Length: 239
Ligand code: HEM
Image (cartoon, rainbow, N blue to C red):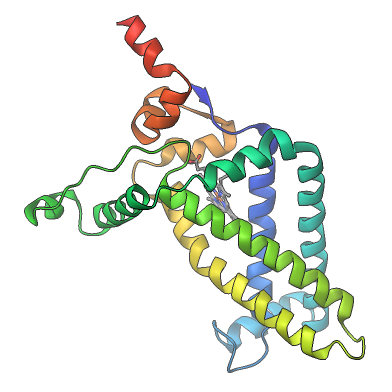
């Protein structure tokens, strides 16, 4: 087995997931405007009923948002150099041609299947990936950017609420907050399916609890990372 995620990264991932899902669900319920409500009026009624009114729901949304920001602030203070910065470097290590090929072929493999791709004369092999595959990198970049957008606009809205002269900036913050949340409402189901539920991803899901992936899994899914760890040389030496 190889260590893939540290304990602190696992804790941050799952606390982040709980906060995000609550914030996304309750946030959409706060859009009590039929022209902007993407789910439907039943969603607003359901959450308002659960919280005991729109005011309580807004308070719960703000409290969970503040807890989420506080957790990240502490994490970044203590783990910036060791974990957050290497993570940023890894997800921004983009290779446009090979990343696009990976996304297209992976998408086709999951939809029409490899047999159909071969019948249509298409190549099915995926370009070799490093610690994160191209899809994970794109999802993570979207998550980081929208997290910054949500935290900044959310904090500004709380700070400015009720202050005269801030109405216009407040409107821009509402729009920015809504666009960031909208982007993640699209990216998250894809992330959850691709990282945890898609065929063959069982070891990746288990690694988000145990921290470890089997060597054989890393060799197939993340061959460039496997090589970076020097494990391919060890395999050759053991032959
Ligand atoms: C039920 C919800 C979720 C499930 C089942 C899930 C599943 C996973 C799994 C299995 C991995 C590991 C992938 C690997 O090792 O290659 C992962 C990584 C990741 N997930 Fe999620 N995820 C969920 C929610 C979220 C949310 C809400 C976000 C952010 C908004 C998120 C952001 C990330 C990021 C940035 C990584 C890479 C982190 C790292 O490697 O330390 N996930 N997720």
